[in-house]
Image (tube, rainbow, N blue to C red):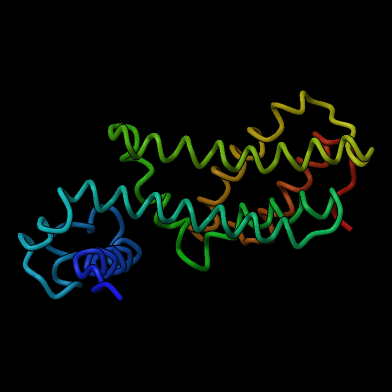
Length: 199
């Protein structure tokens, strides 16, 4: 059996501490010094494991995106009808990243993606992955006669992702509850799909 890669293990440990810092302190407080302190290291020692703070942030954002999509896929897979899968996708897309702090990390660093090409790529990749989940559900629902879209089916996924992007901010800010947001997005989806989704 080969020796464990200590450098790889240490990178994972640092990223876990960086995640803690990002959730607790937000984007502005996620500094090399704060991460190093949380990891029990000197700031300069972090640069042995990562090229820069930007690289750490990018790793956090890509990992949060992956966990978020995995949550949605699992919830959708557990549903047994087109309407059930659509509601599951909306609920997971809205609230699935809250408990594990994925949404908080993604929103904290969203503004940085305007100037950081890699973060911008991560944001667009996440949107595309989410939209593809919706598109698959919609196509199957149309084929089964469960949905009668009132908009181009190619546009509906993007509208739903945009709604989620805007309204999850209200959940994080505490101005709307999870249920209020889910109920609103489900109602909009019903109108766009020409189908009753809520029971």
